[in-house]
Image (cartoon, rainbow, N blue to C red; front, side):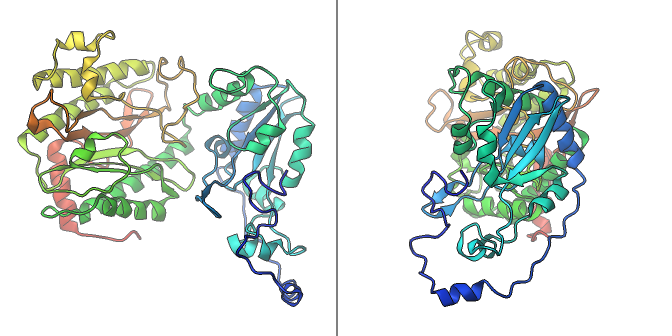
Length: 493
């Protein structure tokens, strides 16, 4: 199953525009190469991955579990998107290479784990210089031994995966589906398919991993803090080059932050939202082809993904000319009050839904103060009404971790309808958005969008704002923006 892909990629890795090599060249390329070993050592975090595999093993005794990372995805013709490993696979292994598959097979007392991977391209064939996966094209890959040493995990050549999958017992195997089409095809579902298209038993595997991820251990919290600290630096970088008196493109600001993300981390954790003026009212504005204007607000929702794939998710709104107008400040302060109330409500045992209602009531009260609610605050908050949501649209936040929307396969009763626990990390991000076309608001409010988002750790006694390195109150934002502009531009270093 590893000789060719189902996406039409040639099995030898060559392309139609490649030359036909003469035998003299091929013979010459096969000679005179010195072999070198990668200087690998065991990674210090490997016990964390082993602990997670043990917990997953305990959840499914006697069953084989198959967790692929996924394959490279075509961007255009013969070029691929940068590969990002499947989050659940990375959570269990720490491996970042494409095509790998983790197989946990029962051994009577638990599971034996094997990482099936594509090893380095040997000099015994022409793959190392002719294939698109060859080392002269993509760099030196790990040998099986090197990878095993680094991750503390037994490894096997990916070419043996097909036989392994063919040998698995129906009804005693679960697959994390949707990541590798060939794995999905090789292990046929044993049970019925749910309404969402997932085989029921396989869905239970996805749920189990998602719910394991709800509680972050000390190492994970450190990874998140590193990503958040880099994000703070990225916001500072942007503020330092944001002119107060002339327009600049949203994409320039996006690019400045992306430079920080690539330098200090792996990449951005999601497509950056840089919304100037009325673009701030579009929740997932990622075109970023507008421009700032003095007097307008600038909303930026951005996060650095760290080298171990844990990501920040932070939003700030800046007055481009350095000062909020009276009306901008009034709306900003409503959103800030909502966020602060939500953060203060967070502690173990509090329902996720109750934090939402806390934030939303403050927003509804603010909308009432602005004279916008057509009904009382209590009526607007009634679940049979919720008319206040015309200007809020989204909930108060979501879980955060190795995915920006982490734990997304968790059951409703453990997430949206569940209670918060110590070690959870979640965003708190209320917002108010007044669309330019909204005739139910005064003209001076149209095109104003404000969201404040921070990353919050649930502690034993309450909550810690991990992104407190950025200002939140309107006064603090103005002071911070002036300080950054005075400091001037900088390059990451």
